[in-house]
Length: 135
Ligand code: ZN
Image 1 (spheres, rainbow, N blue to C red):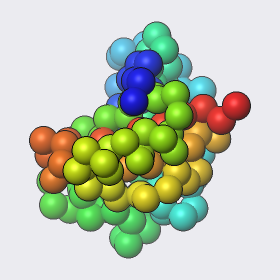
Image 2: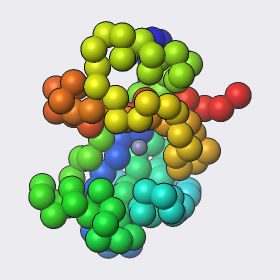
Image 3: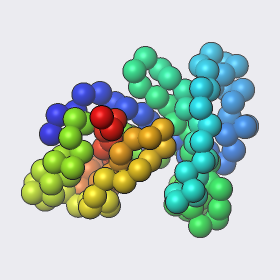
């Protein structure tokens, strides 16, 4: 697997709107996209920091995994996402190395990326996402 950079860091928040004064007003970042990912029941907001993004994740339903995360652990860093060259092959490689996969196959994520999650049991308790930009 060839990781090229950290694509984004996902941060669970109760309300994107309540966090904008911090990210925009204080850090001076610009929110360039807000997008709802229906099948994950989250609203996402993106800020560019160099070639890496900050992705705020707000649950749109109590059933959302983000809602459950916030309930258990509070708001804060939720996952780290690495950009990789060939996601399908990367997943096979991870599996052959004994890494537990949450997603067996790449699926569609926010911003048109193909994504897949690795299980925190295999990644030192850090929920880890691999993603690739489709060609
Ligand atoms: Zn993500």
